Length: 403
Ligand SMILES: *Cc1c(COP(=O)(O)O)cnc(C)c1O
Image 1 (tube, rainbow, N blue to C red):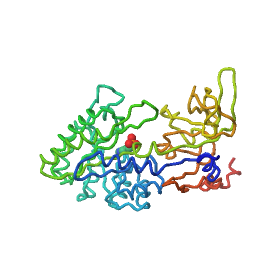
Image 2: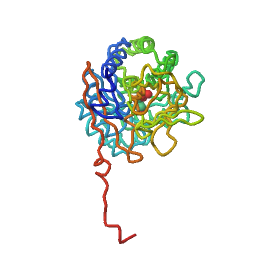
Image 3: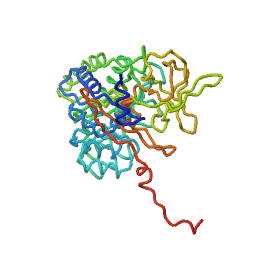
Image 4: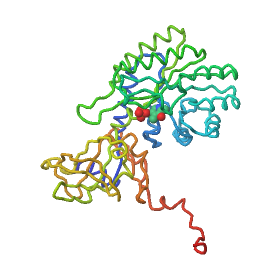
């Protein structure tokens, strides 16, 4: 009996990214259902997984997008999003890039005072979001610190007097307040503290219609892993937010920008074992991939479950799973897997977020294909790179006589 992974690998080749669309739909629905507010908008963070078909799926679900580059914005437009459903939250980009975003008509977030002044001079009527750095140390743990003092993101809340001066001088229309810190926040208490601080600052912005709390939602990577319980967070934040709207006597829109939460668990990265190498110390399983396709384990030291789907009943043994890149390229050390044989398929879990989107052509390898599963059907959503893709932008001018 051929299992589904074997079928997909035969049909589309290996290595292969596989996303379960039904899982994405469930995550989105769970997220939306966790909140009980009048106006909620969930902007999927495109950088986590930027395939057009995935964006189209989010569009159908009613989501908006969070984009950090003009290219991501253009992907969103190509996937069918209306400009008003796209929020631009870049960091340190040129005024030129802001100009393009404004021409398209999307929502923009400003996280720097010099940019605020330039935009105000050039586009005095264009409404903006202000991205704040609240400098809040959550739970006294620097690992989950929220927009800590030396973070490059956001306008420091200590610089708010300058912001207000500029708002007055140019009559800037601030339509929303934004915070995103990138931390894994697990405790509902922490979220609520951030929310309360941001809302107290929002008091001083008269014309806002939105509060955007960014992201910071953690997912499970293994059994017993800590994760953000979205229903608890939803409960707490909804109460705080509804009370705030009541106090201001205005229905604001509550916005979030989850990336990892929406797609991490939906994704699998399928690889084939090229070689098994037995040394005196341990066994290595070499797969037909490396950090060119899947860099999180090396870059962030992230843990990804690995399953040998070709030998589910094999004896348990310990392996180091490594790549084929000519550099240290370890996916996992000392993992217990069902016996790994050459040509077996190994599947890495939690490969939906920041995996394909961080892939490169290092070692002049080709990027893998991507497949989307929906209601038991499989759809190719990106062809595997070809050799042509590697060379298509390269020029070969007449340099010989200069050598
Ligand atoms: C990266 C990013 C996100 C998404 O973060 P996740 O941890 O993937 O949920 C949201 N908002 C902004 C501004 C970001 O830069």
